[in-house]
Image 1: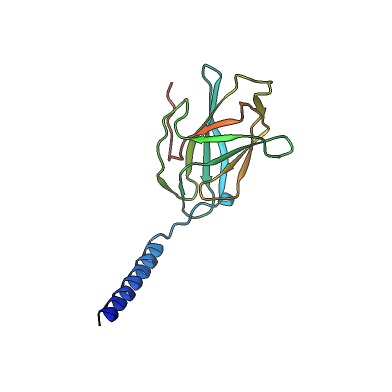
Image 2: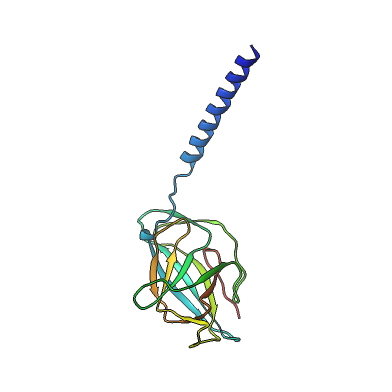
Length: 172
């Protein structure tokens, strides 16, 4: 009797979990923004002392419908033949702004999200610097990427980027 009660309870719990999971899936009807639906561009160029350089990165939704972005863009450096160069991306605060934190952004068609990308270039032309021709930008939750011209020297191939936000104000 006790075994039958436990089995019935377990069956109901599993059915309830399946129902809750299905309800959660149905409630989430806005898809994640696919790389193919986004246009990547650079906004404001950021200069600074101590060999710091940066730029505002924008991802604009051109899908024709709303989609979600959450988190940090993936980044990678390429040479002139579009081969990957050694690089490393740190997520968080940059020399220019504090990280706004991960938030889910629902972008309507035509709306954009921004992140601030930063690097140093003190070792321009040395073996400690990477000379890039392009930047790979992978939207959060994607394996496909966009490519933008990026003719920059980057110390050790090290990049820093903030999480995506509706708008990031750079002061100073």
